[in-house]
Length: 152
Image 1 (tube, rainbow, N blue to C red):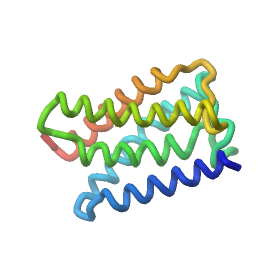
Image 2 (cartoon, one colour; image 1 turned 45 degrees about the vertical axis):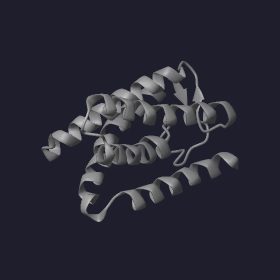
Image 3 (cartoon, rainbow, N blue to C red; image 1 turned 180 degrees about the vertical axis):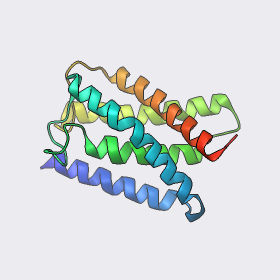
Image 4 (tube, rainbow, N blue to C red; image 1 turned 90 degrees about the vertical axis):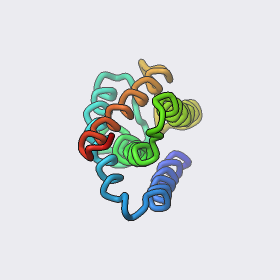
């Protein structure tokens, strides 16, 4: 029951953050960031599960997908939308640190969930694979977002 509660709370937190941190004038840009991340996480999340690298014993839509719908299709895309909106455009170093901090928080949360819950289980995976892959995917998503909006 605690695992389902964690998933529900994750949805609530993501929705609240999106609602309060996305200005109405930036909603179109935020949705683009959300959708561009979904385009990346759907095949990558599917691949990781199919290659038996990660398993999600407790998840929503259990019969629809073996991936974590909560993380791959909702929480991480919302993080990406916010990441894109608040990315520091002044300095490449600041952007690198910003990305590193966000990825470290997400990876830390994932490691805690992997150790203490059944929401995720590493089979042939290590925490640093998550850190590296999230770092790269956030930058790819940000690049798509910038290109689409003709930013910078």
